[in-house]
Length: 339
Image 1 (cartoon, rainbow, N blue to C red):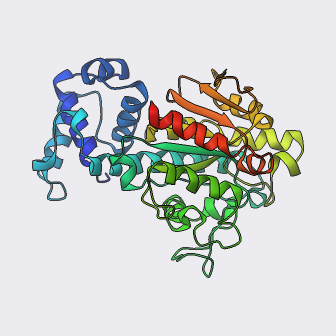
Image 2: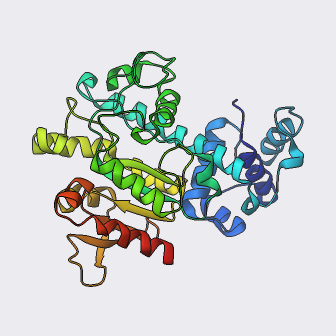
Image 3: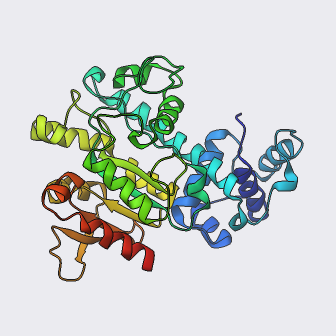
């Protein structure tokens, strides 16, 4: 059995009065929580071996952890809606790691030549994220190379992870790449990349939210629609249509699952109209609506049951810069701040 976060213990405690069985629907009603959050709590508890359908087994597991010196029960709250920011942060990290481990196993079993695919972009959560009322997730188009090895830009005390094959073989690869996201610090140390339109747009949004331009501890995170590069380049522009569709399929529901865990208050898609079919394959109920009189292809609200109310799509920052439509960033930030 592995160590549970205090949040999981609180949840387990809260479920005991509702024995002998726990279901997602009953937990939603009793605990007044959303479907995705309840499902993830139950999944983590079940995978850790602390949750079963038998009341006595759950009581035994809880009693064991109440006697454990690892956890200070004086800091545990029985009401799951009163979770501390620190406990929420640890839980988010646990949940992300769980879905990333599943993702690693799934892709490893589905692809024959893992060496032509880059390692996946995996997120890590800053503590500030869990403390902030405003949490913005930026979604770009593709991860055009994402690898780590000794002697690169950052400290790297792990085996080299320069393609998916190495990622699949290294036992600690998920934790390593989550730490790599921290060390990367939004391209801060890549002099050839830090002033690209994408990262300038990222810092523009941070500063609009009252943050410093640099530093990992932020309420603004970023990821990509395509998590892996194909032969160190764009699957959409360099590969065939079939290869692009396969790379998109491999991304699967990962982004949707991350959003359910991270609970952003706003999502900004820098994907533009060319990636619309890939975007809609990941969010199957997605719809767009106009913002003022701006054409939907340029900037729009995005609606989906998997997204927060404040979700937007606009062009990639490279095109925003070339087409002199950089002000769309300010338009979106104003809509987020005035909501």
